[in-house]
Every structure is written in C-alpha cells, then in structure tokens.
Length: 195
Image (tube, rainbow, N blue to C red; front, side, top):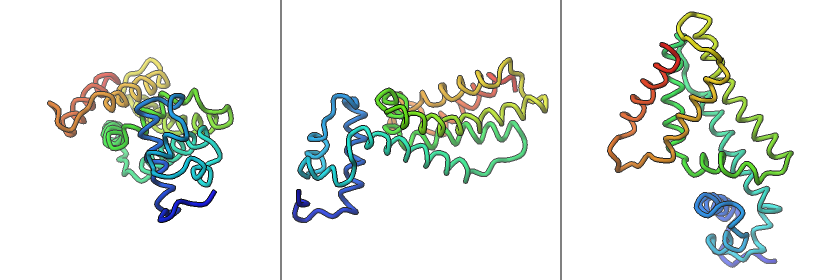
C-alpha cells in the first residue's frame, strides 16, 4: 500500500508511537486496534505495517524505549558516594524522570501481560537492572551502618512501588508541586530505611 500523500517516515514513525502510547494508556492494549492508531495518526491502517510488524511488537518497542531511556538517564545521573545522599538522589531522580513520562510508566506496569514470552523476558531484564541499582545503594548503606533493613530486595521493590505510585495521582495544578512531592517522598523513604 502506498504511503499517504504528504506523509514522511521521519514524522509518521514517531507519531505512530506517540498515538499508540496515548491510546494504549487510555483504553488498554487489548481494546485498541491498529485501525484506531492509524486513524489517530491520519494514515491508512496498512501504512502502520511499514513501521511495525504487529501491535504487540509496537507495545514492546514502546516499553523498551522507555526502559532504555530510564537506564541511560540513571547512568548519567551524578551519584555521590555517601549512601544517604545517593539514596536521596535516586529517589528524586525516579520521581522527576517518571513524572515526565507517566503514560509510559503506566504501560510498563499494566500491559506487560500482553507481551510475548521473549519480549517479556527482555523488559523484565531491563527492569531488574534498574531495581539492582537501587538495591546496590541500599546494600551499600546497610553495610556502612547507615540503613537498617530486614531484606534489601524487599525494600527495593517496596520503595520503587511507592515512588512509581506518584505518577498515578500527581497533577501539575494540584496541591503539591514537584519539589514538595520529592521532599515528602524522600522523607518517607529515609524513614523506611531507618536513616
């Protein structure tokens, strides 16, 4: 099928990803058809297959792109040596990064079940790398006597779940601004690790 007159691949490809993410987050992966995505982009449904072989691969690419960006941003984040400061930096980073991509975060948690086993394994490995970064901070702090933890892995999962929850309720025009949210969450995490 020919490309629609006036469409350009460097514009259409990114628009497909933006609209697919928006539609998947709003209606759920299973409820969204390729025709709906095409209509939102303004192309014929067949044109989507020039950019992705199927809907599940499109979801996988959205989730992988999100995780790749998250890990790259974390790697670029300057981390101090002090365990308290390092944990605070991680907490603030997590909130800042994820508030800027709440739809992608939502998909990363709610739509994993729609991935093929191979794609699921890939995303799960990327998530584990992120979790391992926080767990290493907690273990370092525990070894230094800065944190009191019963189980570093469980604490890691609990902290990430708590921090990620902010994307579900935060509103720019709400009662708390981003800085206040970071401060409050850091205080809760600090207390949770006995610091």
